[in-house]
Image (cartoon, rainbow, N blue to C red):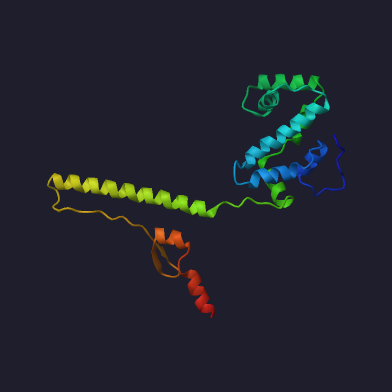
Length: 209
């Protein structure tokens, strides 16, 4: 393992641990996995990814031969929801091989530490696709309106057939509106989601002219 640089006290924990275990360029690796469009990794995914790299480096330092699938299993036994007896057993096994288990645990990072590093050191922040968010919201609301329309028509039809109300052929229209208290604009939700604003911006521009 590389010796720690005592001069850089402002380094994030991810940086310090990466330096300690010679995890070169892992910062860029984390940033790429967090911001890519396809198969993007969450911060909790990256937490496990980073800590497994630390575990692997620690095992390599003591020349521990890792079998296929063993790294994931060891990490699960050290950090997962297992019995205390099982955890103590694997800890003793690793200690016999020369692994400093207590130090290893202290070097594991949280997803908050990953986020801090990505934003403060790698200067990246995941930008959500707001267009997709808007479209998903529109789809959910339209489905709700569709169900309301169907239920209303069914209930009214039953009332008509039982003689409780009198009505000929009918249709039910369901539309939701948004009313802005500031600019006094009333607009359908679908139109609002299409233009993504009310009239406040327009009013502000007019007042400034």
